[in-house]
Image (tube, rainbow, N blue to C red; front, side, top):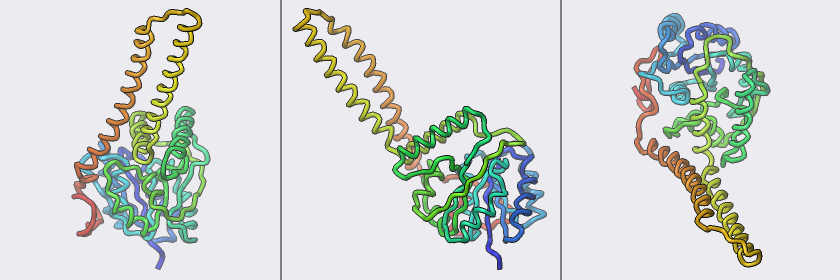
Amino acid sequence: MSKLISVVIPVFNEENNIIPIYESLCNILKDYSLEIIFINDGSSDNSQFILNELASKDKNVKVITFTRNFGHQAALTAGIDFAKGDAIVTMDCDFQDPPEVLPLLIKEWESGYKIVYARRSFRKDPFLKKITAQWYYSLLYKASEVKIKGNIGDFRLIDKSVAQKLRLMRERSRYLRGLVPWLGYSYAIVDYIRPRRTKGKTKFNWLKMARFAMTGLLNFSLLPLRIGLVAGLFIIFSGIVLLFYLAYRFFFDDQFYKLLEWLAVVNYILIGVLFIFLWFIAEYIGKIYEEVKGRPLYIIQQTLNLVLDENSNAQL
């Protein structure tokens, strides 16, 4: 019997891409047993209707419908919670994660790797998005306690044993790009060229990208706190240098300075630094606050072709 491959696909207003991605996956993975899990993350277009029709025709199509938009990471988590496959692939619905790459991921998995990442060797994105992504991944790799490879998104394959461990990690501020490598399993990397989106518009605007980037930095790095230490030491050192400079000019050059003028400038700078530090502290406190509330990661309104296990983490 062929191995079961689960493909997890979040859907948010992707009515034009659902049928094409389904047909492409069925064609490319025809030699495997296949289940496709679509997670409707609060779509306001005809996505739900299309998913209902698809699930009624093909029992291998599973649909999870959220009560509202809970976000991309929550949708991926729900799909992994329900997936029954020997291997689980997470990918987007917009064809920027090309289905043609899946056989390469599966080949590496069958050779013994528990995790197979798909890495963007080239991105056909706007210049500003490419350069900011490059800077961010470089910073995250250098700053993170867990080394997170650059240009690797949520297009990956994980073994069912990895998925079992991942289901135990229920932190609310989720960053799967960090959680998966944190597990420490052996991995392989498959490079691919990321194409442009051809249908629909991206749902990941600059504000969402900024929030997502901040989640990655705060969840897997102490860099913000360490920046505070470095900045504080620099300010103390520069203040001592300034003090010696004033003393030298006062004693040897007979130069008079109004100390209050200097203190006003220094205090102004320190107030700005303090505001930055307060922002960092507030971000960490906010993450702690989200964790201790203990809310479910998502709420499911309905499912199609799926049976919820009694011990599942999924929330109906």
